[in-house]
Every structure is written in structure tokens, then in C-alpha cells.
Amino acid sequence: MSTWFQNGQAVDAIPLDSRALHYGDGLFETIAIRDRKARLWALHVERLRSGCERLGIEAPDEDVLGKQLAHALQSSTVDTQYALAKIIVSASSGRRGYQRPADGRAEFLIGIFEAVPPDAELLRHGVVTRSCETIVAVQPALAGIKSLNRLEQVLARKEWQDPEVFEGLMCDADGQLICGTMSNVFVIHGDSVSTPALDRCGVAGVMRRHVLDTLSANGVTVAVCDIAWDRVLSADEVFLTNSQFGVLPVRACDEQQWQVGSLSRKILRLMAQAGIEECVA
Image 1: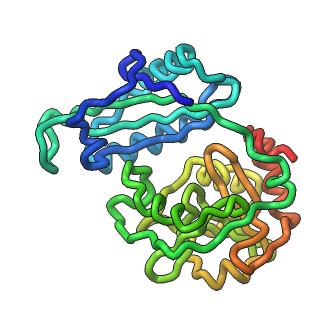
Image 2: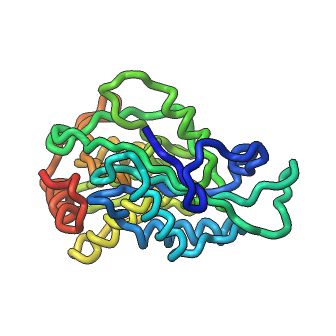
Image 3: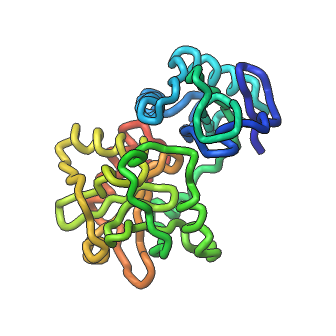
């Protein structure tokens, strides 16, 4: 169940000439709503602004966007004590063709969705993942931003139906780990934590950023670097991050097994202290 709003009004349709519909010409943010408030709002706005700048789309005014989101939360029939908000920003509608209208204006939609907390057992024992055959294409112009173009993730998610598999891990054409279909990935070797560099492809998640900032503030160094697949398999611990579930340890990928080790548990505690309620064991 979801409700959608545009310019403060409830909507159930979009224009047929929408550039978001025809070309995926835009960006989106998926925001955790906890206690009727947008979690990590400043980080979401920062990424949205950066993405708009890189795509040449006019970024919504932060105050206007915040007020529109507050109105949507207040007006929605969804229980906003624990919910999800999706903000879609796209170039304004116009004539057919790849060239945008000259005015450079942006259009934005806000959707409010029901959400369910992750099973506490996944936090304690870790999730099962699998490796994906679908690769992430290298495109530095789009690297890091959350564009409306998600076909790679759609194809990767189509690879399995097993409900026991929580997530699929994706590499680029060179066999370097990039991300999950809906998450960022961190690997641990001994006391060393690393996460893939996302300067060529992939989405730089807001929770990934929050984890990096929180760990740095607590004296835990994270290397942002290329990670070959064999380094993933040789890891002592692996965990995923996502704006909705926060942090989840990984206990398996294909035939590889991992323990939810002491460093993963320390990171969960730090993230719980940093306001991510899903990380409370």
C-alpha cells in the first residue's frame, strides 16, 4: 500500500509525456521514516543535490521539499510510525526525444509506503546471499548517484526465487565486487574493514555514508578500494548496509560460510548508538 503526492496534492497518475517514464531521466531517494521523521534527511538531500547537479536537473529547494514531505506524511493513510518515503525528481515533461526542455525545471513526486522491520533473527545470525551473473556496467558519469535507471538490479534480482536468499552480490566486468542489488557491501579481514570504491559504477548509499562517518568517528578505519571477488571469499566477516534495514551481517554467499564475528557485532552496536534502531540486538 502506498500514497503519492505532487505539489501537496494526492495523485494516482503521472503525465504520459513524463521523462521519468520515457527515459528514466531523473533520480530517487528511498528514505526510512521512523517515528514520523525522515531518518538521515541531511544525507539524502546532499546526495539528491549532487545527483541533480551531475545530471543537469534543477534540484528542489530543501525547505520546500521538507515541507512537502511533512505534508505527505501527515496526509498519508500509511502508518508513518515505521514507513518508507520515496522521492522521485525528474526533468520536466516535454516533447518526445532525448533533448530536455530548455527551461531546465524539475518535477518531483513523493510516495509514502508501508514498511516492516527486518526479522531480528537476521541480525543475530546473518543473511544468506548469492553471487549474481548480471554485472554492473562501468559508467563514471553515473557512478555513485541513484538514478531512475535500475535495469541491472532488476535483471540481477530476477536470477533467484528462493525466499531464503536475502540479497544478490554484483561485480563489474573485471570481477570486482561493487554492491548488492539493494545494498552496499563491507568485508572484514582480521581488524581491517573495506568497502568497494564506487567511482566507476554503483550507488553510494546513504547508510554506507553513515557507517563510514560513524566508524571514522569511533576510530575504525575503512578502506574504500577495489575488492576482487576472491577477497570477498577469503573475508572473515561480511555485512550489508541499506537505508531501510541499516546493517545486516552476512552468513553465506553460495557455498561460502561466515560467522557473525566480534567486529561485525561492534559495528552493529556503534550504529545502534548512531540512531539506527534496527541494529539493536
